[in-house]
Image (cartoon, rainbow, N blue to C red; front, top):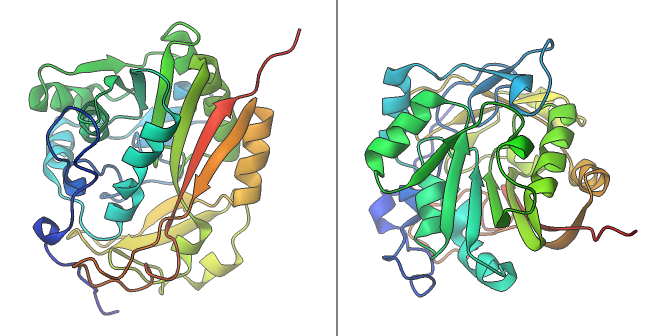
Length: 300
């Protein structure tokens, strides 16, 4: 299998430099998560499914508490296809955000937390990995990072956040865990707040990309909701396959409805072809889906 490499990250264009009071934001500084081989049903918090636990974070056992792994995670770069996942977020946040308090759900070592703060938001990063949060605090001593000890809904007051970002947090969760997490996040949203989910589109598992390969996994083409799918990352030395949990747009929409969330917008970001990166499928097929969700108004 031939490797396709993206051009160096410093050649890529930055995100919208005019939004927020912080410095200009280059995507590679903030794109988290998919860089390690994950065990089945691990999510971007690097958790492993455990059948004998309940609640959102108790559904998973953390496999990345190791401090050395957390340090390595904090220093990795994220070129190529990941750029498209974050490129459009500043404009979406500017359009739908009604306030400043923000939650980065599954913050890891804080890249996406710093991303939000540089857009002018007052943000809290939350994760269950103490090792990851130690790295986040070392890199960002002035940042606010919260260890999730129980269900995320019980960690903050209801309606605390005007905006919540979950970047790739749902890719590895089993369906039941997705439902629990969405319901918990719905509780934390302000009445006019918005939840942004960045997830892997089904197409990512059946195409070749600047940053990923799936040609070794023909079974991906027959995946249904809840099935495991495999993908190889080309931007890291470790090319052992990563496992995600397949989820279609229709399934996500059912989960949103059940959680009391309504669709405000959906984006499928494509490359323009004018970027410096050597795209493979990115100009014609979207690797990512961005859902913008709001709470359904409660009726008495």
